[in-house]
Amino acid sequence: MTAEFMFISFTIFLAGMVAVPLASRFGLGSVLGYLIAGIAIGPVLHWAGVDVVALQHFTEFGVVMMLFLIGLEMQPKVLWAMRARIFVMGGMQVGLTALAVMAVAMLLGQPWTIALAIGLIFALSSTAIVTQTLNEKGLMRSDGGQASFSVLLFQDIAVIPMLALIPLLALPELMEALHHGDDHGGGHGEAGLSLNLIEGLPGWQTALVTLAAIGLVIVAGRYLTGPIFRYVARARLRELFVSTALMMVLAIALLMTMVGLSPALGTFLAGVVMANSEYRHELESDIAPFKGIFLGVFFITVGASIDFGLLGENLGLVVGMTLGLIVLKAVVMLGLGRVFRLAGGDKWLFALGLAQAGEFGFVLVSFTVANAVVPPAVADLLLLVVALSMLLTPALFILYDRGIAPRYSRQQVRDADEIASNAKIIIAGHGRFGGIVNRALQAADYATTVVDYSNEQLAMLRRFGLSAYFGDATRPDLLHAAGIEEADVFVIAIDNKEAATELARYMHEHHPKVHVVARAIDRWHVYDLWAAGCRDIIRETYDSSIRAARSVFEAIGHPREDAEKLIGIFEEFDRRTMVETAQAFIQSDDPHSENSAYSRLIRENLGSWEAELKETMKQARSKS
Image 1: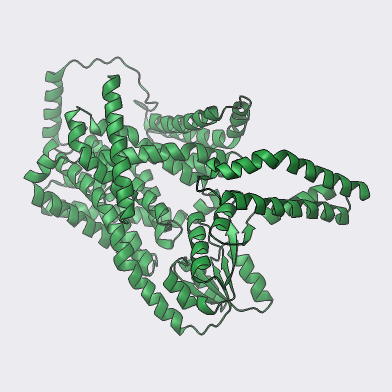
Image 2 (image 1 turned 60 degrees about the horizontal axis):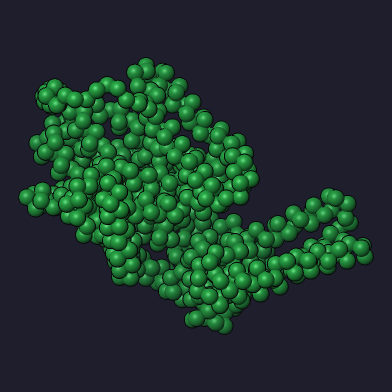
């Protein structure tokens, strides 16, 4: 058994290692690379007797981890602000798609019960593929990305009532056949561990248990995370932090499963609760690698689950059903995009991104067969449609990237030419960082041109009579439309690390005469921006932290002037050492934590630096 397990693991990881870099190199994205890897090794896994479906259910834990990490990035007030899109847009999408698919299935001769079950299955989209792809392409913060995420979140919620409804659609003849098979199958004892806390409970007790579980997750996330990690920290073992983080996610997912809720939804809620925790970044760094591994293997199993024998026998039918589903869902999404005022490329991103069936479709198809709702022969075809539609999703994103987004980008260039703006200051991003910069400049009577990727921000700016472009500030054509060739200052205020770094690199290479002021998310981002050629870098929380430290000095008895002097010493020291460490950092291409030149500099100088700073501060205090 050990040799078989190692062989299977080796095969999966080897396929991913070969396929994903190739797919990324040709602009196909990592998800399509994993899917292709799964298709390639599918025969090997079947030859080895691997239960691909069981492996798929196990690796769906990657989706659970992904939603937990998304929750960590989302403040409760942000989630509350999205409530209309989550429940109204998401509810309309699930309802309209289910009814549309149901109508088509009935026209094709299916009974209404089977047609409704098919509609519910196909109403769901792939949280794993869509969220992963939106993050990879830096589109999650766009209006289309936010709308997509809102609908995906509602779909996860909708799985719960679907699981309750589907058994009510059971067909008598299928139920009889199912029981007949059970009678002759035998051998299944009733002994075993039951992890279902709501089995056999009346409705009101089920509701109470469910609410209690949700309350437990909220309370534990709010009040127990800190004490648990402080206790673990005493051991000073990195691996114990990692295992504790995984244990917490597993515990939440298990609890949600025991009360009949979606584990992904439960962990997302826990992530939102822990978003303000002091250990948020620790949790992110510990869980992210495991999330990537599980998701990668999950995508591989989707590719490997395609039954090419059955597909070959029903090629026309399956391909027609798949393409028909994609077109139907895209039409529904486009309609919703118009209703909710998604403009331009965002409407198409929303429509094409959610046009596939989702990973929960595999679960619901199996559930419908187990509950005598859908015949096994029909279920096998549905599984092919789910897998094939997921396989085609990266191609739909490529269509958006190469066919649709450039067209709207060209339209933006034409619109921009009509805007009479000769501002010498361009600001990329008008959120909580860029907005303050823009307000200060406007108050001093300096003209600015703002580029932002949010319709809401664009509408707000135009209401105040400010020059603005809607679009992705990292696109060279949009920068050209904004007048980058004539600009004196360019402010990078977007909150995507990778995109900001690439934009700084582009400016350094193509517009070196423009002074670039760049927002840095953290210290590592400072080093990345420095390596990209940017020399005016502002850490987004640095100045507020400095002001807080000054307030502490004043609170413990230092006069304002002395507090300013002490803070000035610290700032001068910190900026000097930051430049030294940044210079060392760019001497090596190693990843952040493994950068040898940087690590050596810190190791050799940290003690002397701290001693120098303490002595300088001591002298300043003695003179005050």
